Amino acid sequence: MSLRATIDFLLDDWLGVESLLQRERFADHSRETFGSVLDTCARIAREKFAPFNRLVDIEEPRSDGERVILPQATHDAWAAYAESGMLSAAQDYDIGGMQLPYTLESAANAFFAKASVSIGAGMLTTGNANLLMVHGTDAQQRVFAFNEFSGRWSGTMCLSEPQAGSSLSDVATRAVPDGADFEAEPLGPRFRLRGNKMWISAGEHELTENIVHLVLAKIPGPDGRLVPGTRGISLFVVPKKMVDAQGRLTGERNDVALAGLNHKCGWRGTTNTLLNFGEGRFRPGGAPGAVGYLVGKPGDGLRCMFHMMNEARIGVGMAATMLGMAGYEASLEYARQRPQGRPIQPRGPAAAGGPGGKDATQPQIPIIEHADVKRMLLAQKSYAEGALALELYCARLVDEQHTGDAASAQDAGLLLEVLTPIAKSWPSEWCLEANSLAIQVHGGYGYTRDFPVEQYWRDNRLNMIHEGTHGIQALDLLGRKVVMDGGAGLKLLATRMSTTIERAGHADGLAERANELAAALQKVGAATKAAWATGVPEEALANATPYLQAFGHLVLAWIWLDVALVAQRQDTPVNLGKKAAMRYFFAYELPKIDAWLGVVSRREPVCREMRDDWY
Ligand SMILES: Cc1cc2nc3c(=O)[nH]c(=O)nc-3n(C[C@H](O)[C@H](O)[C@H](O)COP(=O)(O)OP(=O)(O)OC[C@H]3O[C@@H](n4cnc5c(N)ncnc54)[C@H](O)[C@@H]3O)c2cc1C
Image: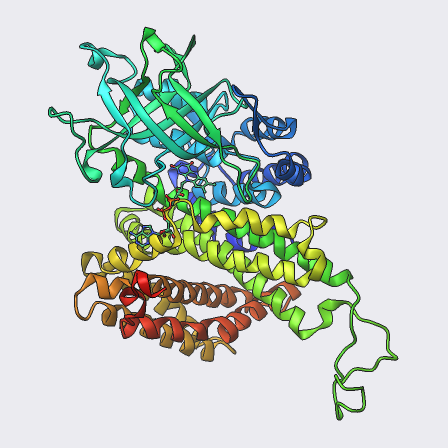
């Protein structure tokens, strides 16, 4: 089944996205306009992204000391993406957007992620501009966001520093008011920034005429000290090249300097940089210090940044998912063509067909005929297609949050709080595992660069690290999301799962799966309580990652059962394939939660008790 067919099935038959057309914001759209966006993106991804995926891996970004050089294909891909209008897909018509539902935007972006996840930096640019549309002033929107939406300029997110990754409260970049008239600046209160930002994706390149950095920094108090913790963090828009209030380049370089390129394991089509702000290499306005304009209120920087987090994390989850899907498709094609081995005799004593129950006089069969290879393919299908369903479900919740009535918008927001750590982390772990299985299906060939699967694995390995590491997502889920508001989010999710369990309980052949899901839901609920039984965070959170894994598998089992209810309608090969993936997930994956929840429930102390000198 092609990606397009899978997406159509999930959007039309499962999520019923057509119902969004009844909402005023999407009223000018139709099934046809939705379809043509998907067609266009699939075509651009096929023509401008996929053929260059290996090229951008081999020709990684390099610097001549001043500029960063990227292959021409990356320039062409950026231009085609910008021209498609996808950078402003969800924005209003009157600023040149398409007013596309986020569900469609996500689905359309899936084609690019699968074709070449690292060529485009569109997600960062859109995220940056979307943030300014919510928290920026009119001038900041007009000058910075609009030029990003058009693709003339691109955007970055500058949070991390060499000494501050997971712990953003330790950000040390300083921002001080720039002159007595700093508040009179049309682009927002003007500051001078000094500090180092590490790991900044797309931080330097020549793809666009300017780069808009969104930078977290601290404004020192009257005593010159930085306020500890996240309360002291503010957000600034810092252009690479200085601009006037109309958005014209002034010809001056801002004091943002490339200190070095990071050489990555994968995802090499996107530059990754160490940027020095305010080191004095450039002197905008005749003085050193990077000029930045305050976005939102002082001290509100992290809250502004987090505004975009749900969508950014769904974006990361979707990228991981599409790498899983790419590996699945590649290994499926390979398994259909690779003859190796003979079938195990269907009946009779093993001796009749030699020691392995095989008849050596028979011709070899394609490896897809072996049960163990089928297992590896089914695992990949259940991870990648299940994750795609999860990401689109979450994207649909974002639309509900933005355009639903008050009650359903509130429910969608609550569900997103609980599901976002899963949407980000589950595909990052399991679609990476899918990529490992894709290599395994290829045997020795999979371990070479003659086949694409090793690159998919390397590209995917990033996703458990950025946008909040796996461990940090786990702490967020167990430490905050499932306990907030007296567990309101978890309860609402359980209600949604119970509806599926109820329906599946009456569906032909699904009743047993419904019981298994109900039991798993009960176990996760009990483990949540047991983890917090002593009320000691150190005890509860020591096993947050196994909790995240069990919770994620519960969510995916629910998603698969819900999808199977639709696939149940007719016995086509596509639907039978979906049901087989669901059966695989319940038989091979869901039982794993017992081991994960075991350590959570008894607050297994071995990890937290381990001491440095015992290693
Ligand atoms: C290719 C790439 C692109 C990136 N792009 C960007 C970007 O565009 N902008 C940006 O701002 N950043 C970016 N990042 C940075 C990324 O978000 C950080 O790497 C990430 O947040 C982790 O920070 P760290 O690398 O400092 O690791 P650390 O925070 O040092 O973590 C190391 C390990 O310790 C664990 N750990 C840390 N703290 C805790 C804790 N309190 N409890 C339990 N475990 C903990 C982590 O889970 C992890 O396993 C990028 C990173 C990479 C590799």
